[in-house]
Length: 468
Ligand SMILES: Cc1ncc(COP(=O)(O)O)c(C=O)c1O
Picture 1 (tube, rainbow, N blue to C red):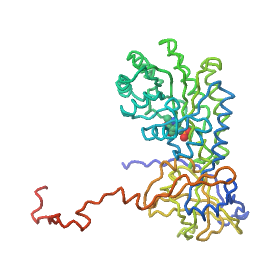
Picture 2 (picture 1 turned 135 degrees about the horizontal axis):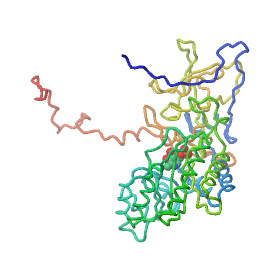
Picture 3 (picture 1 turned 60 degrees about the vertical axis):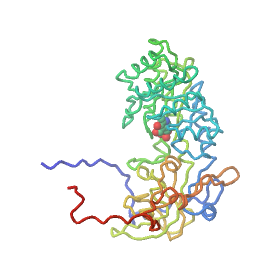
Picture 4 (picture 1 turned 90 degrees about the vertical axis):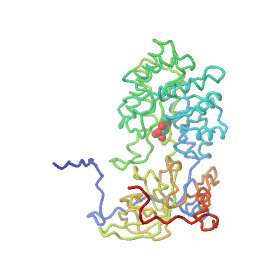
């Protein structure tokens, strides 16, 4: 019998078509400026496509989260998740606001150090750390969260050459109600593996266990998951105290708060569906309370919030290249920014808005990028006014995971600017150039046609080369 195909159920909001009974929708947000700087000026000065970061939004988001957390927890640390957006200017803004650095590779570690972070302001996560990276981190006094028993053994070896006892944390995974469950990082809570790892670490007698870390997932839309996470992590901390006499200094609850983006399969838009910082923080506080860990005994609460701090600060400006009508009757536009720049278009319905006034009806439109790839689709269907080649569009929110995951694929990567106070605009990343590609691709002399000394390639013999 032929295997049945499973089609994932998908609920979509009912959208009006081209000419609905009540008339086409007449309103779409227009973004003419970003923090007081005209989109048209930005495009004229820096070209299209262009990523724009709002310094003000970065600072405001960080301050908002910091303020909420301080109302719930006596000691908090916010550590900026470099992988979410590792542009130096972005990291520097968060560091100025007081954030530590959360890094997951030796490259990110080096970036944090280059920005002036001292070892004790760096949290080093990630599932694979080299011995050299561990030695550097230990020497600098960074907080290393261990992911596996093999890594614990490697860390003990690395600690042998270091003065004093390095401080480490254990990365813990657990079921907290979010889906999918991220079981691949760290030691499992429910099976008792995390507690066993703690016993093994203590027996090893080379490292000091000073923290517990747990990152339950990303874009977690249900605050309840943080209740569960806090409750279980606090429970584990208490077990450590009772059985091993260890009092941890840090409970690190990772990242995962949803930004205001909207997932492709999400019914309500992000600005309605995403919980507030307040809702997340109060769920955590309840979780600690349920584990009988109240304010008076709480250690430092560390958060590594990524996308919820940076997403809304990022805009992608693009221009329409062509407008066409598909055989289905649907209008399509091709813009000059593709999914190589906007990786998150694969899972979010980003807002796409005109940057100038318009007249007339809106029409549901497919927005394609410039790549010669069928997957280069930014929005399958979004209401837009009549558009002409050259018209600017603004895609938002795009600040998280794009400027780190973007690809040099078919096209080169564009500039990034940051709009600062009083409309001051700075280039914070130059555009790729053709030489960036060519200089990294040495061409063997025999392929250049200029290497006279090289014998010509042997023509294949008609008898074959002896292989089947
Ligand atoms: C260990 C760790 N901390 C923090 C983050 C940031 O997560 P988010 O952007 O969902 O807040 C991540 C991202 O996956 C992570 O792996």
